[in-house]
Image (cartoon, rainbow, N blue to C red; front, top):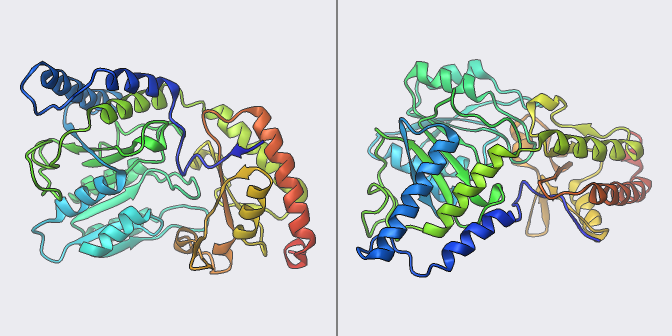
Length: 379
């Protein structure tokens, strides 16, 4: 038996999303730029997908949608496009942002970091100070690694008060928490298809109607002149369906219960295991991020995989060397501590039988590793 517990990395496509997409694939050629009947049908479907995304988010009045090939592309368009023409731009962002945001900002602007603490709490007062010199603010709704939720409504209100546009990276949030952007009303936000049981290769950049971004891809005037290329009709419809389902069927209590059972199993054999975000109200319901002092995540994840349990190490492995997690470093953890984080993320299709199997396998692995690692057991 193999158990997939890495839903924050990517999710399997929901059968209902696949069914809608397959029906559209069966219709044949769908190019919204064509003037004949098939083209008009494609244009109608694409515009309907844009409208469905806005309706689901309840942002129909003041926003519009540009579909991109990935959330990374969408974030690049948002950051680079909004800062084009700004002399020596500065961007406020948290110390725990995804590389899609952090590296893009570093490429084009001066970073104004807003620090997060060891339990994921954001220094909102520090945000106010950084906004005094910022041209843009970019923050995640939820952290992909720890599952920590940021205070997006407070962030948005602070940005509005300072007159600074806000980009919200929402890729990890739909279906994993009480996801709601009605109060925040960010200037720009991004959601990703494959993070919420939709297709890979599609993301939605939702932007205020009065914002015009300088396009990064040229060669056509599609999507309000901001993203050239034939519009991906079927993928857009798949994302719209996935977003609708994610907000309608989050199953938060079930996911939280499965995570609690997994962590209880871990603590049975490793009483010194520590949850990174201990407050369940401040993290994604599906995400369990922990560390065992003295025991690297690499050793655990490799051994778990050999026993049929698939999850993720927070630390990155580059050229055979384990690198500390940048997220954990950004939260104030040491280099050694930042090599110890393990992320387990359950999902819509995780069964109780799979959780039982995973608990037994994880306990077996940890018992073996701890017996060989006295320094971890002693802490």
